[in-house]
Length: 182
Length: 219
Image (tube, rainbow over all chains, first blue to last red; front, side, top):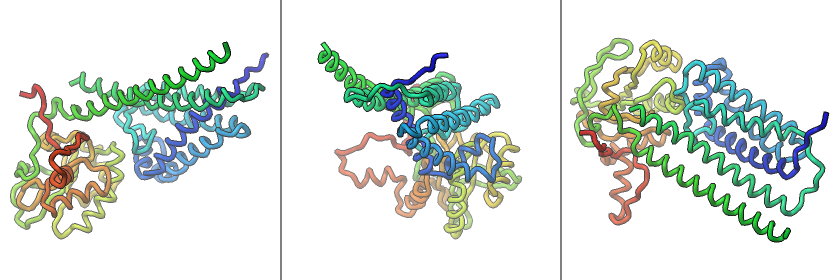
């Protein structure tokens, strides 16, 4: 079977983008751990005594993986950790969607963003999961050139802005649907 | 040839990033427009009681079946902080310890009353889990409709004369304290305070929490 490689420039681009997204997500959650603990409680999946501990460990894990994914030596393992975190988050969202609890807050970005649960969040996380899985693949042998730096910096910046746009568009879409229901 | 490709590539990246930025600005503006029009809708038949107006009188019973009168002159001259919350709102849960500490600190003149609506059993579980037994807990949809509560948590401060002194969306301890501050200073809201202390020609068009909105097509 032929081994699939990921181009090093694409690898760096995705790593930088995921590092920014998960770093921001973790830091925002740590800014208000009590709020994130309350968001966790809404998911009704964890025993109450553990919520406070998870409200600290989950964001720290996110930040740790976000930092480690930037370095080629730790990239594969950090990407696997991000994928695992995403599996856990997405499962929590999916379970509560199945329970019909769509009115609770996602908690995804701490106090910065209020997002109701919806199938779109699951789709969003699936895309992030695929990207994290791609980062866990071995890198091709091509040397990084100066033009690659442009690709990495501009590509990662564009990716992060587009990701923010997708979240805003989702919020607006849900708000629009609420208006239509009135 | 390669040089032309490089230049074209650089130009494309710059323009793509600018385009993404513009899209972000546009989506944020749509979001702000939503915020402005969101509280209109089926629930808002009336304008909410404004600061300085008498609070409508409600005779209600709380979760533990105790009778409670909201509004009107309080015989003991005590003020009421009416706090709208819900068991599923994370910010509300975060505010609970803060509410308890304010209840202790301001116990000489202030009573805190919690208000929500929905299934009593769910709220009873919430009260037990968060140890809210000390506070009267009202379940009344009419109350939320009357005060035009859009987003939670929302608080209304009613003084001993039954007059609404301050109200607004609450996200932090500072917000809650600003209501108490607003009452002590005799201004209706922090927006009013800023407005009064600002030259008239510099009116800021930002999201204003306390303003009653004119609702189009509302009769």
